[in-house]
Amino acid sequence: MSPCWEARADLVVVGTGVAGLTAALRAQSLGLRVLVVTKASAGDGNTRWAQGGVAVVLPGEHDEGDTVERHVADTLVAGAGLCDADAVREIVFGGPDAVTRLRELGAVFDSGADGRLARTREGGHSAFRVVHAGGDATGAEVERALLGAARDGRIPVLENHVAVQALKTPSGAVAGLHVLDGAGVPGVLTAAAVLLATGGLGQLYQATSNPEVATGDGLALALRAGAPVADVEFVQFHPTVLYTGQGARGRCPLVTEAVRGEGAVLVDATGARVMAGVHPLADLAPRDVVAAAITRHMALERGGIDDHVFLDATHLDAATFRTRFPTVYAACVAAGVDPVVQPIPVAPAAHFACGGVVSDVDGRTPLVGLYAAGEVASTGLHGANRLASNSLLEGLVVGARAAEAVAADLAVGRLADPRAAVVGDLPVAPVAERDSLQRVMSRYAAIGREAEGLAVVGSVLDVSAVDRVLDSRTAVEDAALTLASRALIASAAQRRESRGCHVRTDFPDRDDAWRRSQWVRLTPSGQPVLGGVTVLRGVA
Ligand code: SIN
Image 1 (cartoon, rainbow, N blue to C red):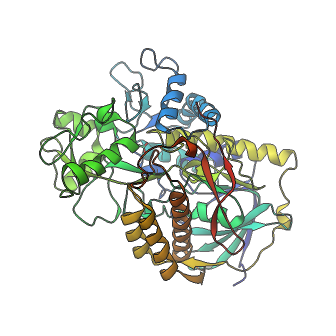
Image 2: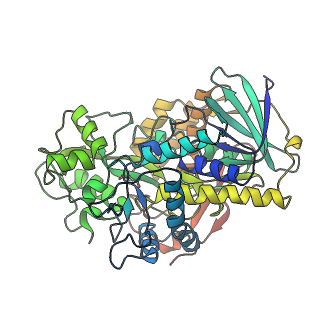
C-alpha cells in the first residue's frame, strides 16, 4: 500500500524514553523542528520501569573520596575489558550536568535527612553514588519530568505509530521513516535525521524485566538500513526479578539491586549465602557475576532442584522497606510475599542489551542521517556488562549530545535533503513464531550457552520463520525479534570465551584474544554476518 500521508521535520526521534525525550527537548531548544514517534503511548517505554536510579558523582554530594574518575573505573571493571575507555569518560563526566539539567526540568530526586540528595549503592559501585526518586521509582519520575517538559514545549508526539523502515536517498543517506498506524495505514515522515531511541530487546526471552514494547525494533531497523550493530551477544540478566512461579512469562517485576545496596543478601532454600566466596564485593558484585553465580548455584550446589533463590531483606523494618522500596513492596504483596518478614523469591531474567547499533558518544552511526541513543545504541559505555544505573545516565547524556550532533551536522550540510528520500514498498522479512523463539532463546541463549544449543536456536528459526510483508505492528515486532535473535546467536556462537554477560559452558574462561567487539551487518539477501569490521576497543 502506498503511504497515505507525509509529515516533515528536521529530526524524527523514535521512542519516548529518557534518551528520546532528552534528545527531542535539546533539539527543540536548538531551533530544530522535531517530531517524536512511538509505537505505543508516550509513557509506555522502558524508562518508567527503571527502579534503582542514576549513577552520578555530583559536586559536593558524594561519599568522601568518591570521584568521577572512580565512577569511570567501576564502569570499566564491570564492562569486563570491552568498554571503550574514551566513551566511558565522555559519558560519565557528562553525568553531573545532565542530572542538573534534568532537575531544572522538574525531576525531583529523594533527599536525605541532611537535605542533600540521598544516595544508594548498587552492584559494582565502590561508593554510594546512585541518586533515586520516589524510593525505587526513579524511571517513573524521570519519564514524568521529561514528558511534562515535552508537553509544555508542545513537541509533537505521534503515538501508536510503529517505524517500519528507514527511508534513504539515492546516495544512501537516511532521510526519514516509513511508519504504520494502529490500523496498518502507512505514512511517511521525512527528515534530515532519524534518531533511534527505541530501547532494548528483553522480549527475546520468556521472562524479562522489560515491558512488551522491548522487541529490538531499532536494532532491526538499523541493520536493514545498512548500519552495523555490535556486542549483541551481551544481554544482561538482572539477578533479582520477582519469582512468581514456574513458567513466568513477559514482564516480571524487578527487585532493585538497591535492596542489596541497603544490606539484603541472596540465600538459597537452605538459608546458605549464594555469593559467599564468589567475589570480594559479595552480594554487590557486578550484575553479570551475581546472575551467573545464582544460575550456577541452582544447577550445581542445589543439583538443579531450584529454579529460584531468595533475597533476604528482613533486616529492614516495615516502615523503612515501604518508604524506600514502595514499588518492590507492592509487587511482593501482590504476589503474596511480605518482604519484611520473609525472604523474597527471585530469579535472573533478561534485563538490558549491552550492545546495539554502533554509534559514537554523539549518537552518530556510520550511516549518514541515522543516530542512536540509549539502550538501542552501542557507544562502548557498557562493554560486556553494564554497570548498574548507568543506563538512565547514558540516555540523558547521549540523548542531549545526539541532538547537538544533528544540529551541527545540519549546519555544515552533512545531512541529506529529505525531499530526496525514496519511498518504496513496505519491506518483506522473515518472521518466526514468537513463542517458539522465546522458548529456544531462553533455553539455549540465556545465561550458559554452548555451540550445540545455539545451533538449535538457528535451526528453529530456520524452520519456523516465514517471509511476510511488515504491514502491522505485530509483524514489525516479530520480524525484529527474529533478526535480533539471529544476530545474537551468530555473535554468541562466534565468541568462544566467557566474558561479562556472555557465559559459554563450553568455553568457560575469559580469553583475551577475544578482547574485541564483534560487528554484525546484513548481507543484501538479509542474512546477518559477522565481521567486515571488528574493532579493538580502547580499554583501561
Ligand atoms: C535496578 O534497580 O536494580 C536496576 C537498575 C539498572 O538496571 O541499572
